[in-house]
Amino acid sequence: MRKRPGGGFTLLELLTAIAIIAALAALLAPALHRARVKACVVRTKATMAAIEAALSMYESDFGDYPASQGGTKDLVTLLRGPVDSQRWKGPYLRLKREDLDGDGEVIDAWGNKIVYRYPQEESQDVPFVLRSAGPDRRTETKDDIGNW
Image (cartoon, rainbow, N blue to C red; front, side):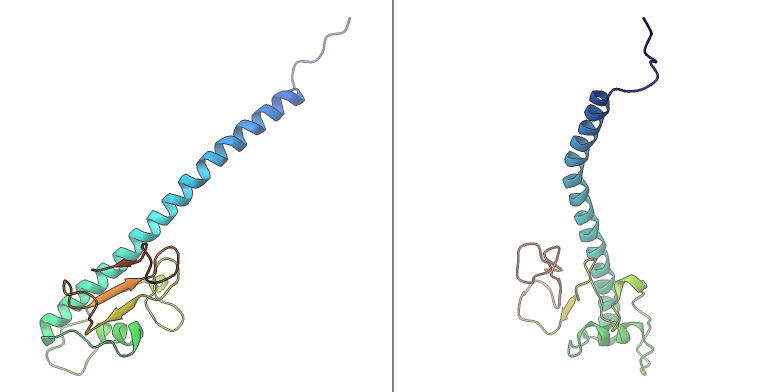
């Protein structure tokens, strides 16, 4: 009788290993997705916190917040300066390239524009509104991210 060489794996062993790896990957995928969404939420909140801080410094120097007539592009220009005023002590805002779209508008982690509104009528708790559509990319849903 000849001995079988024992250096390889049987087909059954290979299929079992592949099935275990596939099962682990299937269990891990939702957790990775949740972690990615959470990271995007944190990044969006950090961007909005930077805008809030810049707006507070602007308001401290000028006595009022800038009006929201031209979206966040005009807001970013105003907060980065320079503004032709002796009261201006900026720049108030420093953003990374990935926080702006091609038009210079501030975007959230999903690429949607962040909305700035002042004066606003949505909430009496905050003087201005900052809003992101959130992970579902639709406004007025429960996953919206804002400063209210």
